[in-house]
Length: 214
Image 1 (cartoon, rainbow, N blue to C red):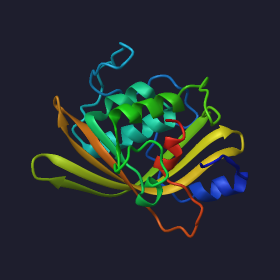
Image 2: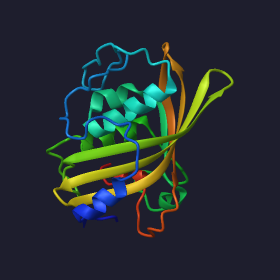
Image 3: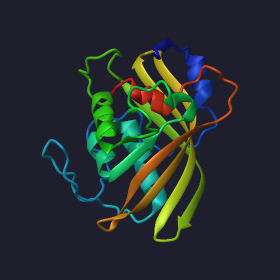
Image 4: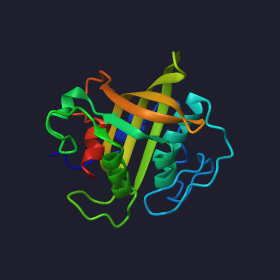
């Protein structure tokens, strides 16, 4: 089981330096983001208002995903996911994750949204402390069009998850976003995580961190 560990401010700044930010304002609250995806019902009966941006550009969708993470915006996060969404954690983490059913290498939209609901709940009660702040900074490495109108975007991400002023998790990780059009707008079909060789043997993956809030 992964546990929280104290950070020093210098370590956090060193991890974040040199990355190009594509996420939202990390100091923003938990309310709705400034750019919202097209209307999609949510589990609590609330619908996400129509967007001011037509989600036809895969880079826009990926940047909105980073914004949803950094703003801890549940509704925007949900609106960007396809109904058949899958998250694939790092292979090295997969054997130890309780989010995964036996002989499975990924989890679906239901588990992903349950995790995200818990990570955005200031009153979360579980084995870990409630999350206070998250930042996701992306550096896009490539964007490819595939036959059939599908897209693949690969990006390196620096993600910081705070459960206190100097406590939490940090990870440098690589994310592959697979996207396709649904109801006229691009949705994220899957996110596949792979490790970046950083020399930090104890570094955990984004999937492993999220799974603590299943």
